[in-house]
Length: 225
Image (cartoon, rainbow, N blue to C red; front, side):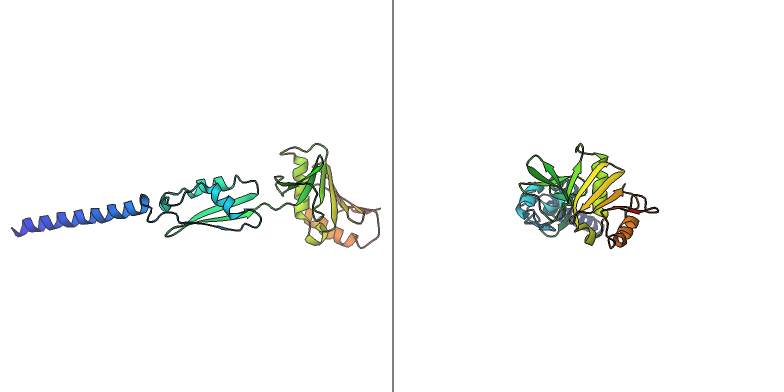
């Protein structure tokens, strides 16, 4: 009799444990009790939080445990102004979206408009008037994936802040032929994207000397005219 009671006690405890586990699983994966209550966005400066929240495609009440965070991040990254996105869960009901916005580094004329582009060549915005703080990028045949544009943007991205502020225009005729025109009219023949740090150090010294053109395309042999 005692052995039979022990068996029933074990069965009862097993059923009780299974019931608790089943209830917990239902609570986490199927119930809205631990569902999404808030989609919190951080890192956005110009993109409205509401726009990012809509881009996630996550509805209120969806069980937080079933949200595919990588898939949601992929949806958010489809927004033109977003460079990167990381999505994570914050229990009990918060979906956290951390983004890095694309930062325009140059302007490309498009007809009568101005296309703002980031360091990857992605157009972030079209404006009627180009912001004076950004250099104008001029290439012969602008098109996506153009190595000439890539080289010019790499040069712009590598410029020290104090020099970048003085650049009015960047002209590139090939990946190895990038030139800068300063706001005071002086020109810098930069060459390719290679050894940009060395070129920047050299030009910082050369600009103290009056001249019209400074050629640092080969940092080992520079010329001033």
